[in-house]
Length: 125
Image: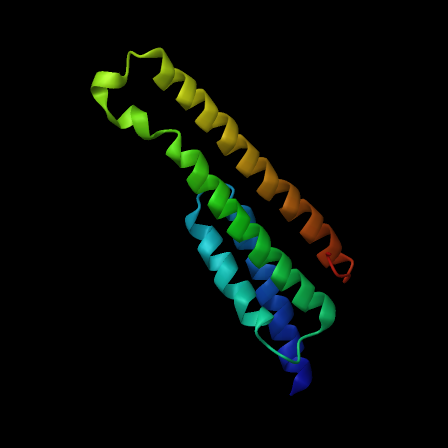
């Protein structure tokens, strides 16, 4: 019975890493990665390295979502057509692109570090 739970935890973490990768393309998959990792993180009898991966995924997905929302704030002036010709709107758009790329690179780096440790069956922290 316990071995089945361990395999299920590994499966959840692996699927969370897939969703974490897909979150690089759309933020909706980040929520799925967070929820699957949360299923493993709240279990008491999970292996330590699997538990560390679940917490790693939850932490990095949450930080990515916060950075993506912060980056989205810089694009708000683009919705007002009358402001479109102003230079400061262009500057805010450039800042939004920079912050979006920082968030994207953050999640890509976290995914690479996490998946590399996952294949080695080691804790990610």
